[in-house]
Amino acid sequence: MRLESIREPARDVPVIAEPDVLVVGGGAAGMAAACAAARAGADTMLVESYGCLGGTLTIVTLGGFCGIHAVVDDERLGRVVGGLCLELEDRLAKVDAIRPPKRHGKIVGVPYDSVRFKGVADEMLEAHDVAVMLHTHAVAVMTEGGRITAVIVENKGGRRAIVPRVVIDCSGDGDVAVRAGAGYDLGHEGETQYGSAMFRLGGVDTVRAGQLTRPEIRESLERAVAGGYPLPRTATGVHLNPIEGVAHLNVTKLGRPDGSPFNLVDPVELGDAEREGRRQVRMYEEAFRKYVPGFENARVIDIGARVGVRETRLVHGDSVLTEAQVRACEKPADAIAISSWPLENHGRGRTTNWEFLPDGEWYGIPWGCLVVRGFDNLLVAGRNLSAEHAAQASVRVAGPCMALGEAAGVGAVACLAHGGDARAVDVEALRAQLLGEGAILTPDFG
Image (cartoon, rainbow, N blue to C red; front, side, top):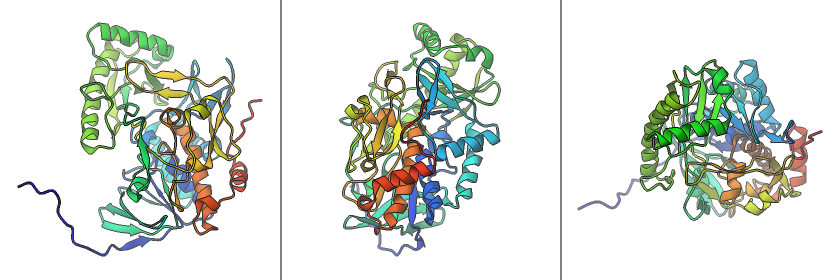
């Protein structure tokens, strides 16, 4: 007879820390949240499940920052993300790990070296006096009323408890919020954007490859499809790395055998997606070598340690960033971050659907999108914010996620003066503090 469940014995869990602010997840949002909270004077701890910080930017090896710059017109770009993002860029520049913005029509990315990023991230968190625990998973949450009272973690030391005053969930999948009982949507009616396995190619003729436009690369890959390669995606993101001869590729599209996207918070499907990603990487390596100029001698030198996830759980907050607000470029009075990134939807078919905002336009993200509905001392930041599926497709990239993280970190410290109550925060004062730290809430495009 198959057992349905077993009962674990009760046990006492040692408390290892009682920080003012606990940040779960060390990606773009989590790094910014932790640095911002510590900078504002809070005793801050960050826990990360992998062995380095950076999340999608390092573990997935993305290759290019998106969403930092707006397209102002045919010639000019303008910054829409400042603050701690600028500090990160400066630190990367000091170790020759970042390049100037690269424009592909109305798409703008900033190439960077994902390997050197790891050390830079360590230095940045250390400089802000953040206590970091790597290889540590948040596995359970204890609550009382509308408050989180403890987060249970597990690592090589066993099962431990952290007792924070405020928690910021930057896990990407909303793990803490969901374990606490928060409501959420899984994409749109259960269907999310497709994930991708990211990889790097060495042996690239970067001069020739750098002259290719995205439409030209797509035409080459469509020829590969006609030649018998069953490529699921031909709309690509190719970032030439600061290392000579190396390119990052964002080109795979991970779907089930029936073509639908994997549910990347289902452990079985996540494993299936990893294997499918590696299969596709080998196929794209062959297709690029055969059909794309400059890649004739290319070889895969690195595959992300995990698949790149664009969307899973969208946690319910006091406010919801809607598709209509993004399209209308709304600028609410309580905006704590802004974005000009297009609605970038990785849906069915071989293309990526780009819907661009008007040149020089942007929209604001309200504070309430970070405040988890039903909880006093729980915030979210990053791609698991409170947003509709189509709106999340615009706000989920690295630049806006760093801005959201910085706002969450500053806001979390403001909560402390009110017993950890996020709804008692004076949003005007929060905005003023963010502006004082160099954040951008109203861009000046000159």
